[in-house]
Length: 276
DNA sequence: CACGAGACCTGTTCGC
DNA sequence: TGCGAACAGGTCTCGT
Image (cartoon, rainbow, N blue to C red; front, side, top):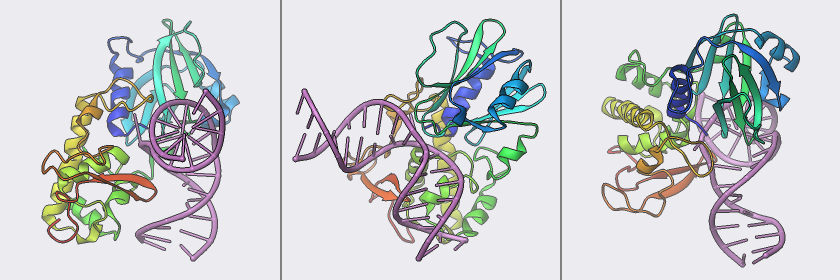
């Protein structure tokens, strides 16, 4: 489910509080409920519960699609995968059917990890790098210059769509934002990475940043029954728009399957070949 | 190295 | 109405 903008939205909500909830910073974990042991990547459920108890939440952040909760002793990380979500609720609220982990905090609040499809995971580690080590650069990090990005593209001979979704190449893009970024950059999803010119690489980086920033600005996307809050789905230009007309040229948006994932693009605005 | 298929899960939507 | 197939924001592992 969530890609970078959705995770960033959740991280900000937990860190700063929001209309319906207050900040988690400074709160202490008083009780840990494990509803589905499979949601814990490491350590064992017993150790997970024991170590979490009594730790204070010092900060909440994000790296790629990982949600990072810095505690007084350890780091707690979540990956939401397809259907995960993190909710702040009153301690006494009804336990929802898909709640997998629930941390009761002081001040009458609890943090609930809800995950319908059970793909999501939580890690409790001393050193966050144990989990985050393999990730590529943050797309919005200004240290990622167009030159560096171009070099990284040239280092592979891969189709752009799957490459953009490879978290070791770039951290945070998923199926929606990859399609939208390629559209903004006017690049065909099957274009080979090592064929990109300096100018095309620059366009791609710009498209990625633009779509991510817009996504964050709109608090992410909410599709179907999953995820809540954001409204960026109302601004999709190609994703889930197969058969509808391109907002630029009126050509019908096409859907193909690339790397077993739905891929949407405009055949006119995103041509294959050198001029693409 | 690059790519495709299958696995992991549950729920909704679509087509007959 | 019923029922199976297709599909869903992700990632891992295996085989070619």
